[in-house]
Length: 245
Image (cartoon, rainbow, N blue to C red; front, side, top):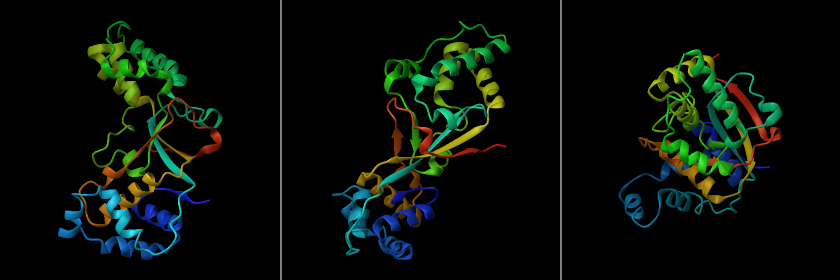
């Protein structure tokens, strides 16, 4: 079964080569040959970058192009070490919001912050309005999940925890967040899904091309997974990494 896994640029290249049925060295050479020159820039007025790279590289290989059967995703978070991923899988927001709020309220209580000191912000209101279809979410590119480049760093603090801290603690939300960070380690959950969409492979190839040609932000080509309220089952989890000890 072919798998698209973008653990690194080199890993993405190897994965794409296997999907396309060619040698990884040959694929890298083809990508390196497609320089971002005047002709390439001119063609960008008619085609999106990922579509252009795919057309120039894959279409010229002269072989039948395959498609990945599954995709590996990276979910970045910060949670207690005893979170039961292996038993419950990766849960959507509707199934973990209550527990998260209880933890934030407990931290606020320990800091002597009144539980009615805060006000729900727009971000929190949006999540509540669409609670049944929120997450779990993940990144295609591992480096994006790690918060590198211009991507948001969810390993620092999950967005929902920031929302809850503001809703509970108001002006003292920063104190709650600091305590949450102190008491929870960074965690990267890697999982797989069945996904043969060509757009995902195109974005991975664009990522490799941008990286090889020194683009200032190759992580722009990250794409995101959203479970829309459906948990990722334990059987699809590949690894749980605790990143800070």
